[in-house]
Image (cartoon, rainbow, N blue to C red):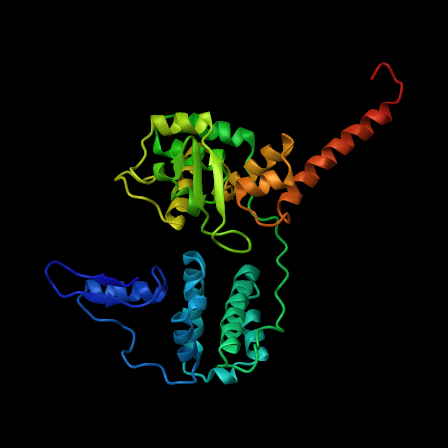
Length: 330
């Protein structure tokens, strides 16, 4: 896909870079002012890191990843190339990549995303015989001890519903995620074209291992009531005030504002609501395979977390009953 900016009846100016990336946005703002691309027209010198990245972006390996992954990599590479774009990529050693990781050590997730991007770049370079080895392969990820997104509670849902009644866009947002378990990127895309005979069939943009997994999700009565009350769009159930669909990022930001207005504590996001979905299903006897089918997980790594927790509760209850013994007062 190629993007252009045209102001009034002026010339079309082509925008360089992945949509939403720093490179793209710099060109976009330049084009609004009538200036051409801020990126030099001449090609990068062969053998430089900039040249290698440019070649990667023209490959099927780059094109086969999801839009979100490409955008994340664009952002990371933008900063890397600012410092080392003219450096021969053969000079990029494990030590240099380790230094890049260490410079980001205060944010382990960012450090690991940097490392993932460099591993992917040099893995491709080695595959197409541009590079002899992958210098990022031996660099270890930083330990990122985190419990992830804070899960919602049923009380949070009730509080949100009390603030945003049926007939509001904010309520549609909640019910779509809560009743489907979709990630925000897929929830923002869901629309009437996906629904047939009461079941939504949608190809997910991302799973923990790959994209392209198809989910089949019944439209539950609670969700149907919210959709009937609207407002919804023509091709997207979730839309803004002007009927426009949301990007993943805009959806997350807007939903957080809705949560603030409803008094939901900071740190609870759309993904945390998805965790509540998994908890409810597991608490009601859902199996690992049922969780995987509903939430688009391709392995049982995540579903085991929820089913094990439920099993712990059941075992603790059984043990407590045995602890009572024959005490009739209990």
